[in-house]
Length: 88
Image (cartoon, rainbow, N blue to C red):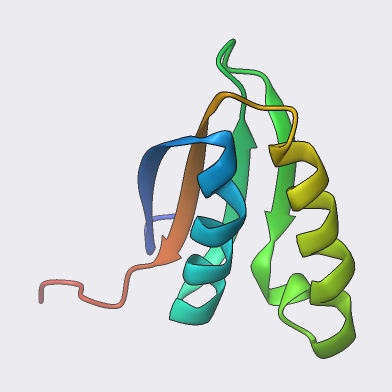
């Protein structure tokens, strides 16, 4: 379930672009969760970024994404971001 202060974005990427896109999203800093789905819209991996961004925990997460990406041709990355730009 997406909270009111959360914005969702979707990116269609090839398997070889998955790891680079995930790294980019983590660096942005306002990403809460990353969900990776295959062409059949099945969830392959769901990453709470606040957990993954904690130092040593990010390396195994990225390694798992890299291994999974080698098996994918196309996938969708769904990103939940904090939405701090609320209108008053």
